[in-house]
Amino acid sequence: MADNDEYEIALLDNEKDARLCAKLTADEFVLNNPLTIFNQAAAEDLLGKWLLPFIVDGFHQKLSFFIRHRPTNEIVATIMASDLYSYCEQHSHDGPSSSSEDPTPALFSELIHEFVHDEFKQELKTNMVLYIVAGATHSKHTGKNLATKLRIHLCNYARDIKGFQYAFIQTMNPATRHIYVNKMNGKEMKIVDLATWQWKKNGDGSSYPFKNYHNEPAVNILVDFHERK
Image (cartoon, rainbow, N blue to C red; front, side, top):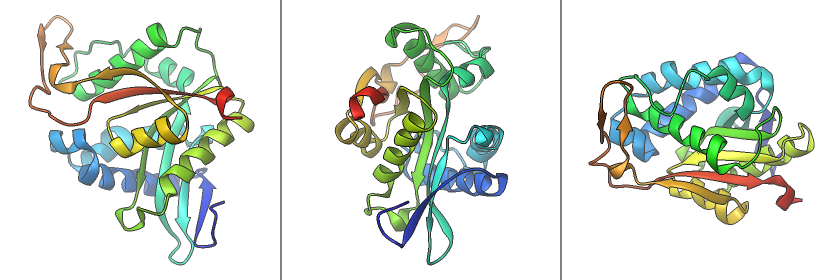
């Protein structure tokens, strides 16, 4: 529950709300996410190719939340998460290199691979690392600390109710990075300057698809729940 009667935090547990949360995220990413803007991606593409498949297939895990604005009954913020172990099992075919025509999934697959195999220094197990995939707050409701409250609520729930020990986040949004590092004591791991990132395509050489991208880097962040008790 949020700190006042105007907003309430709720667990995402049905497909109708899942679709609304996915649409909110797609709409806000098109307006505010640096890489989405650089890629000139349409909200419909984000929705159909990434957000809806993830959130609709995964809401049964009960690891995603949203904030509802009580006066209007509108969903105004959301945070989507999964068990990293389960996510890696489902995407075991996605190696650090990809034959896909889209370098963006290849970038984030590479970052996950490096975290799991090089940075984490432990054997990944189920219900161990919470993978926070995406979050968004409606632009009309920013500046009210909703994003921070929602992320803290999710992490406390994952630790206390589900038994997770860590949260893993990939971000290139400076506000999101600030929340996890400065407010939640997260540790920055891999930091990638997208302009110099080399896309190694299977059997097809390599390229620098983001060479003209001059914005925030992509960052792996690990939040240790043991340090937040």
